[in-house]
Image (cartoon, rainbow over all chains, first blue to last red; front, side, top):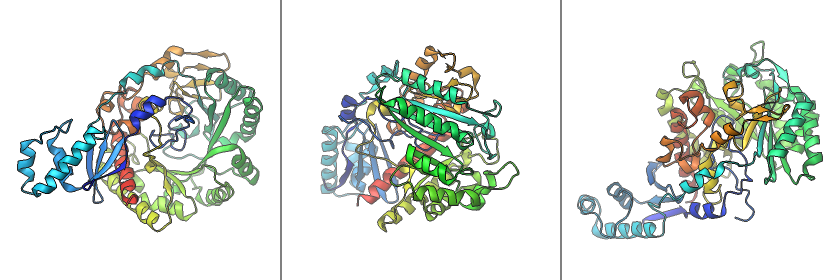
Length: 48
Length: 452
């Protein structure tokens, strides 16, 4: 494509199918304790 | 649903439901203003008529073909297919615990949400027997989960460090038998750090949160001892030692910004200059009537500052001197799955907090609100109905989130903030939302700028 550059291709739908293992951290544990950003967390699913 | 915005010269388009992120030239970017939730085969006449004054036909035709292509492969105006997963959280195991090991503190930070360390419940240290019961409770309730997270929190956890060590040793002694992997985090203000404690923390804690607000004048204004004096000079060398010996384990130098330092980029830079490359500086969460609170009319200034910080990060990255700012961290490709993203913080469901008395609350920020006490690890009581209520908090249960472009990034925000400031865990806290959206716009722009 010439006028559009894709930084990342869609992957959320695929992740829903293979996801939900629940092995990841609870969301506000890593640093914040006062807010919540889920998208900055690590996925822990070995099978994904 | 899409979100389009221009920042730092980049036209960015986020396709909410697929997670795709694109950088557009002006022509396709303008075309989006004439499309609603699809890219039809025949371009809207109004769009072509209007934009033909600005772009030539070849550019417009090419741009529209590219939009069509994205639409057909599900990376533009993709559908929201996730609501069916929203009710899956009921019955989820508990996997994370905030262990309030000390309801006491040797600082009296003005903005402390824990009422200067005791959560309004009286100063108390957690006895080992209570902590042991809490670990047993977590093992019992975590069936099906391997990774268990335990945060030592307070108050100031180092005021009860012998019990911290006992808890770690106890958990390590039983984790294999139960097929668990404990990961410990400690949050500390640093005053009581010694070489021995640094060694123990660096060996046993997979993450370590070091409280520091940035410049000495900023830190010492609000992070004060009982006698009112600041703590910067005492804590900084200890934090530097801890970090220099930490290897590749996670840590954050973690500060709070308030209305008093809306130029917080300077504090972030100061922390980086001190040698901390993992930095988190976050907005104060407080009653808006307090002097230092971030109020709605401060938002334009805070947004400007987030943009300044984002540009600083890009600049430093290009110079090979990058650092990590927690709230701009975003893994666009391998981040959490959609199911995690829609379920949000999971407080009161997969995550709980335990007080020195053994009382269980949905999270550390709910501690002290007896209306939401969930049980006690000593007498074994646990209110499953309350857990089930929290399990239903997700982006589809929150009307403001359901139709928000940022829903799969922030996942519904902090339920405790929602409860405290909006009166309901399902009602998004407005100021937090605005800040979160701005941070996400900046974080994604950094990705665009550094992908060049």
